Length: 321
Figure 1 (tube, rainbow, N blue to C red):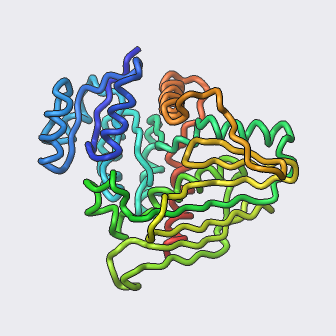
Figure 2 (tube, rainbow, N blue to C red; figure 1 turned 90 degrees about the vertical axis):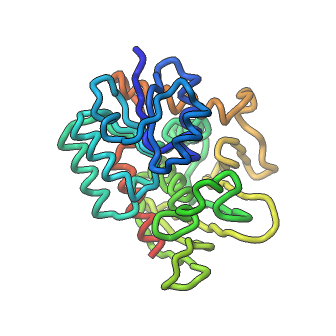
């Protein structure tokens, strides 16, 4: 079966999902919309085979629409989700679920009460590296987990490839690296260790408490049961970006570097894992979409639900306060 997908939002993430869904035989990307007229015109030129509409609501309500993929800025998610729920469509949303926790709780209630399929795009839900770590935890290869660390640094924010979305990604109202990147690792933490509790946090804003710019530094301490998890993230300065997540074990420790590269150590040098995978990034995209197809077909899956994304959002918004 081929699922007809409507795209709401044709910016950075929308284009990325378009490119990956185009390669997957289960999806028919037949229509899209963006609130920006220039983005709509650019999409018409780049994807002539896809209908680019002037309004999202008519697309969402069409009888042939199976899936509504939402990649617009997060404050707009509620409006589009409500329209999709009203039309009885499957909703596949980008993270963060939203920026207002009360609003997002209402979204979760909407999708659950209507019984519509819902998912949020957290690739660590089916990541090769994450699944491998889960397997090692189950098999005892890690030993006792004594803690985990999230370490992030970006020379600039937004990153160069996000320039088209800088107008909102650079502002604290909807953007910032905590919502865009730290959220992935909060999700991974809860997938690995269960519900997380925020113990302490501090976010630094370069233009002060009353400004509009997004955070430049974040320190936070979480706890999952008796497992401590630390977060240290920052922006600025010359140097390569750093994105890593480390699980420290009594027998062996594992590190996910640059989203999908896996390393491990038993006390000696870090060793590269999963070397048999030629392109871990492409493999990650494929696995994510296969996972979503399993959900659509009613088979076992590990896609993140709106409720799980809400748990992440609640922690992230608390960190930013």
